Length: 293
Image 1 (cartoon, rainbow, N blue to C red):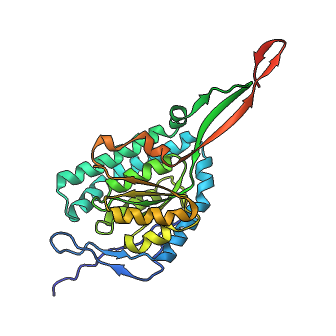
Image 2 (tube, rainbow, N blue to C red):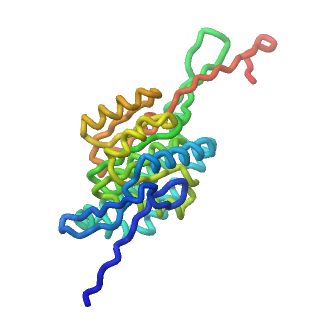
Image 3 (cartoon, rainbow, N blue to C red):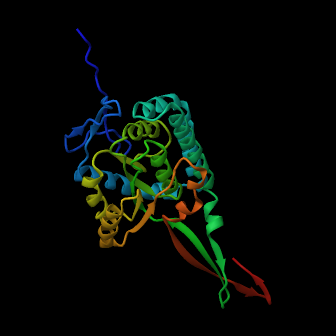
């Protein structure tokens, strides 16, 4: 008898764990040859809510870490991804990419993580400022994390678009809830397996699969989500996200880039999800000389 292949069931990643979807639904995408890719969770509104709760719980601790330590954690993700490079190349190729494109995608994803890891303890110096004031004070502008970010990953790539959106968000101390590519979902959950075996605290990155159309409204209207990052060219989707985000004045950032190019990595993608805080420090005169403490 001909053997029946056992398809892998790809679970979602919420709070550092791999639960099955609350909806109990799955879908089976196919590659260009008509081959089934696997059993993929079709997430629901409840999964979105659970992911936001996990992201909010983790946000304070992640933002409170030393910036250098966040960079170490991100570098560790890159190390773990490097160790499993062959698996990711095979997965991306199975989904329809050429071997060369799959290799480029994985290598660029690793390099991108290292790029943003290097910025973790430097972006505040570059983006911050000392402001001139007309009084005996120092006035500083410093950057702080926005909070929980809803990320809509690139639909046309499997790994590099996902990593390119996540990396600047978490480098700045935010946590995120990610909607993976619906048609190319395999690398998203395999990347979650990398996260689970690295040093990333549970809840910092949460990855959901399924219909973006179904999950976009509950994520963009959620009152505990502070910002939305959208990668795509669909103006109708972007308009809906912007309208939904008005409820709690979420900032919405949209990116339409070729993620395989080095120009798509940008310091200002970190600042897109930062709040600017201004602090004042008095200057006290002692014995006619200026001194501070």
